[in-house]
Amino acid sequence: MELLTEELVREKLQDVMDPELRMSIMELGLIYEVDVTDGDIKILYTLTSQACPLGPVIDGQIKDMLHDLPGVKEVGTEVTFNPPWDPATMASDEVKMQLGIW
Image (cartoon, rainbow, N blue to C red):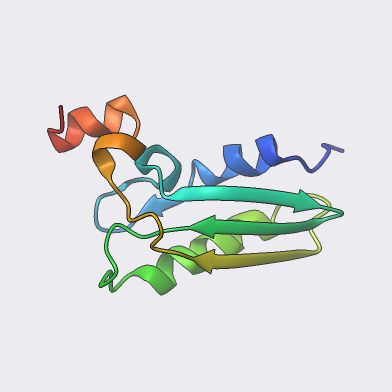
C-alpha cells in the first residue's frame, strides 16, 4: 500500500481540472498549501477570481479525488484570496503559454 504523503496528494490533484479553463488546478497554481497528518488532508487553495461561479465544483472535485487515496480519513478544504491568484507568477510555464502570458 502506498504511503499517504504530500507528494502523492499533489500528484493526485494534477487530475482536478478547472471546469472553465480545462486546465489542472495544480498547473494553474491554485493550490497554495497541502498538509497531510495521520490520514487527514488539509488543502488551502484559491480560485481564478473571487466571483468564480464554479468554486463549489472545484471544491467537490478536490474532495472526491483525494478521498480515493489509501489511508485518507478526512479531507478539509479552505479557499483564500490572499494572495490573489496571479497566473503570471503562479501558473506553470505551459499554462502561461496556453493563456498567452509572457
